[in-house]
Image 1: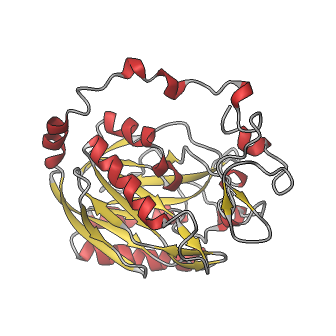
Image 2: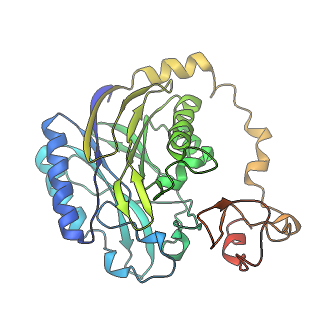
Length: 328
């Protein structure tokens, strides 16, 4: 794939998975009519964002692969000759649950799933309650090029983008569920939407790849999802950006620029992997967040919608074990 159209499907989600699926299928067909050849849906496209609540039973939302969503999307991909990226709540045959993206090639084949590697556990994002982490990054050779998928929280980790770029990904899709606290449109620390877009544009520049981020919209519980799906080229330029409502964003991209920009910057040929050992070194036991008296990366003060990071207050968040487990 050099010049091609991609489609991002940005929708509001209700409580009925079947209705959500039908609504999404209609949006995918609209993208196909506009010429999109690779189409990406948002994170957990078929279900509400249930991880904003800690410890609930969400098993009814999970599905197997193949399952209802992938069968319907596979048939549509085969009929139209398009690639579809379908992020969903996966239940495996042995009863494990993952936040998963299924890449469906243009002949309808289900390629090996990507399972979200970085799992947050923070107020309104209690994902460790529901999802096991994946352990592998994948790059997919599809009919329309080499693509990678990283899911939501993965986008804050530059190592993930670099890993798939080194495997030859031409474009990275980031299906996402991100918003602001309802009623607090500009948090004290700054604009989440701006930070979200900025970090992914940085991945595009640092790796000389295109990125495409697709986010949901609408108010669910205490979160107002702000949409704003976008596509950036290998120089970090935003080619198109959606608004805050439901939208089918179809964008023409030219991946032939990736290599020329990479050669110009020299980021890959001038790498020094032998100096990067600290990136894979485990944190010593006496330097964990708990040992230092900290809670990483945020805690919820029950009296107000305030995000804090330092120091840890044991009265408001006494149990650090789930947090520490992510760092050791």
